[in-house]
Amino acid sequence: MEATSTSRSLVFLISGIAAMAGLLFGFDTGIISGALLFIENDFILSIQMKEWIVSSVLFGAMTGSLFSGKLTDSVGRRHTMLLISGLFISGTLIASLATTVSLILVGRLIIGLAIGIGSYTAPLYIAEISPVQLRGALVSLNQLAITIGILTSYLINYSFTHSHGSWRWMFGIGIIPATLLSLGMIFLPESPRWLIKKNQTRRAIDILQKLLPKETIVHEVASIKHSLQTAKPRFRDILSPWIRPVLFLGALLGFIQQATGINTIIYYAPTIFKLAGFHDTSSSILATIGIGVVNVAATIFAVFYLDQLGRRPLLITGLIGMALSLLGLSLVFLFIDANLPSLRWIAMGCTFSFIICFAFSLGAILWLVVSEIFPLDLRGIAMSVAVFSCWFWNFAVSSTFLSLLNTLGPSHTFLLYAILCVFSLIFCYYKIPETCGVTLEQIEENIRNRLPLRQIGQPIRPRNIGTKRPELQTTS
Image (cartoon, rainbow, N blue to C red):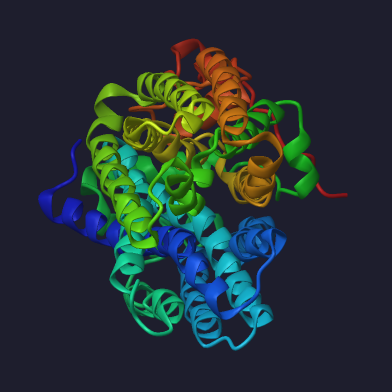
């Protein structure tokens, strides 16, 4: 049954507060695109140092994602979110007040730790408190918050373009959402699924009574307990034959999201627009604001239609559009020496279309799918592996982009990303399941019954009920 209007409102409020971690994710990754242009006015920076200032956040995120699953399973989703807000606040203060490049790197590294843990915890927390019919939209609120954070960072970049110590203000504004996240999480409940996992069923029921219709709570608790009827998981259990396919799927989705080039646009957009012909710094930053606007608009579309159109159609359509947009950018830079004024506008159009296609597909769907496909007893460990993969490839791509531009040139660099988009499209077409409208427990049952990846999102068939579930090995 549908949740009542009161419970729906509460679920949206909880999800909105938790999604503040996504807003900080977007803000702190996007703000560097403009701040970098002004940091080099105060410090002498090599190409490698510029790449490190950008990618220090990503190295921190990669590191944070490694222990995010263990942390959230140990102390709970809510307390982990409180820790994240503290890391954001401390990292922002260090970076904005830094007197050396080393301190900027330290501050950005701490922010990265918060982003890495938060990029795992926020969608997981939202997925576990969401009714099945709202899960796609609510988890996608986190991605919407990321895009709003990116847009906000671009607006802040432009606002402080002509201010003294502009990069310090650009970094420092992040204190505001970090404080709001900290205050909001104080009042939010713990995940009912985590509480049941920790044998705190009474507390879980009290929370579920506020989130779901009363007549569904008994079934919900029974379903969660059923999914936990295994021995305590260990890290090596994620390599069991029945779990390996979805682990591979999650890790490869992390690779696909980053290797197709999204963060070369997010982090280096002003640099790209300068290469395309927007030579003035403020003009290139202003053009970047357009990226933030279309990113938010396309993500709003995804929030409303992921649960109506499904995950697969949006993902396949988006990857086709991304490949064509990158091919267009490659052709623009191939003929850029012709010095035609129209080329810079074509480059802007291709950049915008790439962002739109990414936002309603890979941008929203990665975090949603990896929060859905892993069994509850292994979700913490397995999801952290998928998130680590995402941040590892984010770091690899972002820390080599400027070097690739210098070595291959813009045209061949974007052609490389276009080719990776095509390979990603082929993989997703044959392997990505449709999880729309299916409960997390149904998806888990299908995985345990070793259905092919494309079929794990289908409703459980009667003949599958009662099938013996693969169990984790007991600790000797």
